[in-house]
Image (cartoon, rainbow, N blue to C red; front, side, top):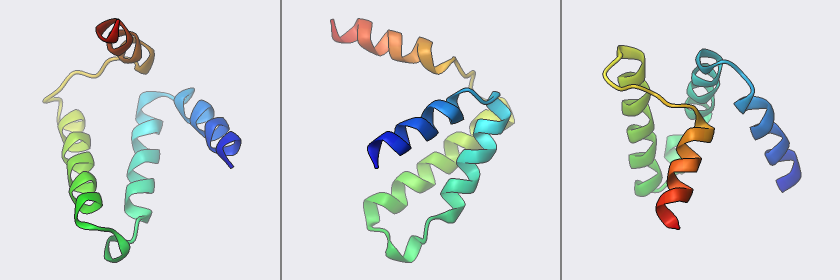
Length: 76
């Protein structure tokens, strides 16, 4: 199962930013909030807030590889 998910992630990350945002929106909307716990519901709300910030131009995005590099550099 993990291999399939990893493959999907690789394919999704190869999409243009706008397509990735649309995919993320579709996935978030597909979650049944009634089945989620309080923390999951809060994370969904946070994801939607961040999505809205990006769409409104309130934040500047960076490529995923650059973000991961910065995190790895910080952990060294």
